[in-house]
Image (cartoon, rainbow, N blue to C red; front, side, top):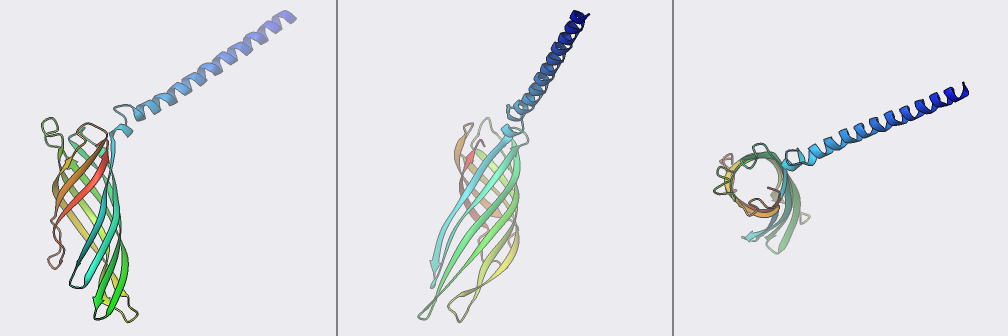
Length: 209
């Protein structure tokens, strides 16, 4: 009787151990499959690409000068393979102003930011893999000098603009990982009373575009 009970207990122990091991393997396999699905060629992560434009600009004339430096990162998601991708784009720019009036030099600075959403189309990726069309809606909040003050500074006021860009670009990636790009864009929503040019150029780097 004792032998039967001992045998039964051993059988129960090994059955429980085998069942637990099988469930652990099944759970681990399921988790692994989700991870593999995320990173494989058809997964979400593999459809993402990354990029950013660098801003470095110095302008001057008529006793006025401006220095600007900034970065505008973006993330794209390939909706239709190489044909269509879309995603968010943000930017942060630091601007420094100098104005000479008489014998006094006035100084001021302001930080500007942008938030937008873009879409890119490669109309002929098999024939022209480096050429793409760029469409973008952007909200821009910018600090603009409006007056000089008695303490030697420049008064800054903030303004908001809703920009809509269309244009063409060239990207060197063409199936590789890292690449550089250049774009020429036209702002179709520039206010009539704005002194800014509707044409702009962007230079930057991309990864997996």
